[in-house]
Amino acid sequence: MKRRRTTAAALAAAALALVPTSAFAQAGHNHIKHVAESFRGTPNEAGLLATAVVEAEIARQHARLAAGEEELAAIQRHVGHVVHAVRPAEGERGPGQGYGLLRAAEGVVAHVGMAAEAEGASGPLKRHAEHVMAATRNVVAWAENVLEKAEAVATATDADAAHGLAEEIVAALDAVVEGTDADGNGTVSWGEGEGGLTQAIDHLELLMKAEGIGG
Image (tube, rainbow, N blue to C red; front, side, top):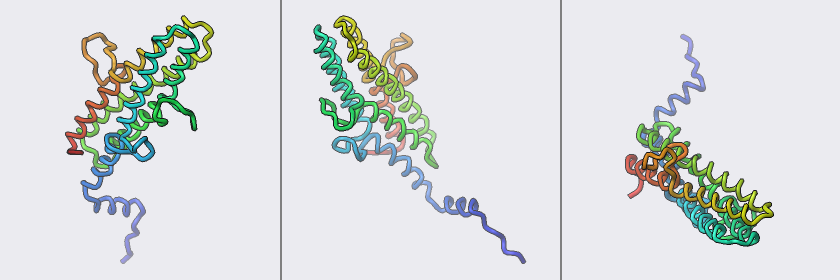
C-alpha cells in the first residue's frame, strides 16, 4: 500500500482548519484598532484616523489664516504651514504634528482594506469598511489637490492670484473634514466625491459596533 503524499497546499489547508474563527476575526480587528485606537509611529501613538483629523484641522486653520491675508508673503507663509500639516518633509518644522494628513489618511485606507480582506472577515465589517475607505479616499484626493494648489501659491507672483488659491485650499480642507454635498441632495454621504473624515468616523463607529470592538 502506497503512502499518500501530502502536498504543501493540503498542509496549509489543514493548518487553517485548526485556527479558530475568532483568530481570523482578531487579525482584522487589529487593523481596525490601528485606525481607531493606536498605531505605532503616530504622534502619541494615536489611531490613524484621529491623527488625520488633527492634522486636517491644523491645515484648515492655517488655510483660513492665509485666506485672510492680503500680502503675498503672508499668504505664502501660512500656506507653507498648511503643507507641513498635510505632508511634512523629513526634519521640517511647522505647526503640524509631523506625521501628515496625507500619510495618516493613506494609512486608514490601507488598514481598513486589510481588515476587510482578512480571512473570516464578516459581512458587516466588509460593508462598513467599504464606506470608511470610500470617504477616506476622497480625503486623500482632496489632500493631494491642496498640495497642488499650495505649490502654485509658493510660486505665485501676484497676491490676488495667491489669495484666490488660498480660498480654494480652504474649501478643499473643509471638504476633507466635513465632506461635501456634491450632488446637491441636501445630505453628505460616504460616497465618492462626498464623504470626508466626519463620514469616515461615523462609519468606523458603525463597523466597530457591529464587530463588538472597543467599549
